[in-house]
Image (cartoon, rainbow, N blue to C red):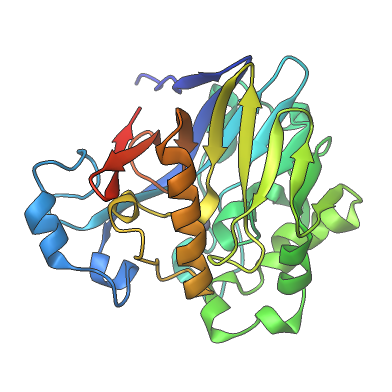
Length: 298
Ligand SMILES: [Zn+2]
């Protein structure tokens, strides 16, 4: 059996590599884009859309993963997927996984001990899971030498009763198992509501809506630029239909505003967009297409 060599993107002086935790197919678009999905979009555009967006039954394909950024001095992870062994009584699909994520991370050239920073766009179930791992019945930091960095507004909300509502069922118990242990280990640093620069190359940019304090993370190095858009979009169909929210977007009007702002920004610049959930490589470019936008994988 051959091991697939992860694709490496160069952004200025740094490299970016995808580590995919899982690919998910068979997702009905009508369920994923509640109230928005329009069958005619697919009928009319099927031939011109990039391949790999849907399966043979016209159901969506999405992924969950991490981006690894390597600079001369640091190894950085952006979002940490879902994790193994998690107790998610209200989210059985993502509960108690047993996936070889750490092995894939190693194939991408990273051991847990050498991670210097874990940057989290928001604190949803599929972005914080590998923050911790279960050892002798206790949740401990997976990356013991890392500083975990995330928006303060996310911590305040998900550590409070306010977040324990129906819209957030999928995130029930996530803060307790995947965030609190790194807080208690003294490994965290928060980003204020206005966002801001981090290290020399990153900038946290508020893109709320999908979650209360979600931030996208821009990367600039040696004149080149990329954007880790988090869950501003879940699937390339939203590049073509910016008003479609996913079923996981909590504050829907604000989510549409943030999505459009990101698309406007990256459509006119050579900015690589690194998504969390797109299928295929999960990376690509947004360009203008008439009055709207289109997507191409790289
Ligand atoms: Zn997500």
